[in-house]
Length: 164
Image: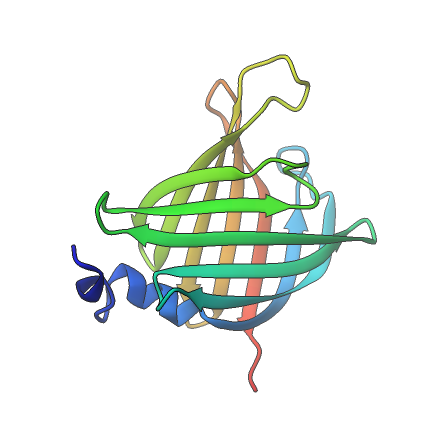
């Protein structure tokens, strides 16, 4: 699909354009399945890059009162017909960049990536991120995927657009 086609109403780059703006809301963190570890305010900005080819989400929140920052870059690869993303933050990824690929879903998209075993000696863990835009706002939800394949919600950001 040519880039110009991908910018038309209802297409992937049109979705990215709809995400642009300033956002605020609540971030929830679960370090164990179904157990809320922390809940904190979050603010962020999504800006379009390179004529709308990519979107960059810069955000800040906190965990147990300690400031946390992150950057989620995402776009749609028209050649491979898939969403692609990179994720870095000051908490989950240490000094690594997580690369992700995925597909469209209703009202958004999802991407899958992986990260090294937290203990350092086992197989990689998976990480699925869902991005959903509705009339109520933007929800970004991430799930840990164990090496055995079980999933558990790890992060949920519920955001509303900041009106100027």
